[in-house]
Length: 156
Image 1 (cartoon, rainbow, N blue to C red):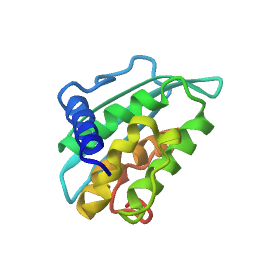
Image 2 (spheres, helix red, strand yellow; image 1 turned 180 degrees about the vertical axis):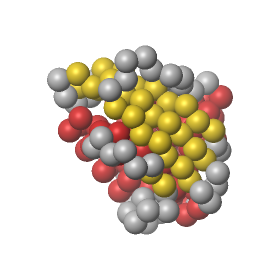
Image 3 (spheres, one colour; image 1 turned 90 degrees about the vertical axis):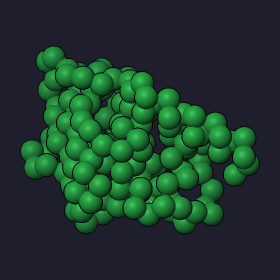
C-alpha cells in the first residue's frame, strides 16, 4: 500500500470517528441487536428499519475505540438502501478482508471506503474492534435476540 493511500484511509477512519454518521436512536426500528467486545470494552446497539427486504434506515449507539466507532459509521452508510442479501454479502466481504493475511489483495470495487480497514489485519487485536458492528448487523438481520460478542466463534 502506498503512503498516500494509507494516509487517505487513515483520514477516512479519523473522520468517521470524529463525526460518526447515523449515530443515535431510530424510531420505528423493526430490527435490533446489541454487541460487545469484552477485550477492548467496545459496546454498541444497532437499530434498523427493513422494509420489503431493503434496509431503509439504520442507526447505532455505543462507545469504544476509534476503530469500532468508525467501522460502525462506515458500515451504516454502506448498508443503508441495500437489500438484506447485499448487506450480508458486504458483511462476508468485510470479515474476509480484515481476517485475511496482511499481504492479501483487497477488493476495493466491492468494499469501497470500507477498504480503509484493510490495515487492521496487521494488528490482530484491532480486528475484533472493526468487526463488532458487522457482527451486530449480521445478528440484527438474522433477528437474533442474543447479544453478540467478539469472543464468539467466528467473530474474529
